[in-house]
Length: 328
Image (cartoon, rainbow, N blue to C red; front, side, top):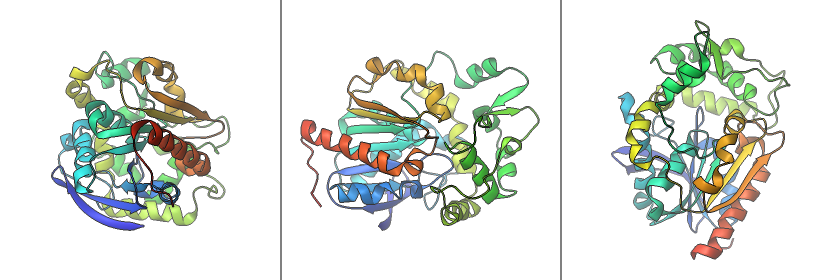
């Protein structure tokens, strides 16, 4: 794996790449890093692609701008678009997980001329809603509980909770959102008003096979160094995103698309109405796959299945779009 820093959209972005061939950009979510794609980088390289996993702005070795509004979606899309010339490419395929999925969905929506495919993991493409997201959440969940996106809104509150014990908080968050947590799984997406998210956490007796002690140490080390404000600031822009993307309300994504979710993954389960609308919102959908028994951390919990789906999707686009992978 080759590590490098590139400049894009006025910031510094840390990239980790492997392989040669058509460019595939891998965009992570919260609370992760480029490392969440550690199983995909060699698999995509072996299949003949140049796989590049980034640290999203606010994470790892990438820049962390100081203002909350510097993490609005149009800024994230600008980062992705600017990576192409910075990496010497004119087009790419996008793959995103968790918050990375809306970033790549919206990149393909706003700049379909630059991307020959888009794959979202966990979070299905959902066009802009009728009202501001925070208002909708607060009306739905009432006075006694907060949806986690709302819980993350006030700067400093979630940071203070997490940074008391970064490693243990990450372990609880990863475990409770995984497919391995015993059923019925704790609902960490809803927090009692006045409580802390970690009060809903359970912890494994030993780390799951897909998240070793070394893996957890890597993530904890990254966040011990950077803090969590950059990642949490993405949540603090959902209403700005709603305003910024008004011109694209109801617009479909017109490039070839893949969706992969897990039947134990909250955003996939909540997103079923969006998945049922893919015929209208993703008219060039190649496949929508829901992995049984899989939780939120799809490419880590099920790396072989994820790799197979991604490579099959990429090769299908090779045939129809003129992209040709370099054979390994």
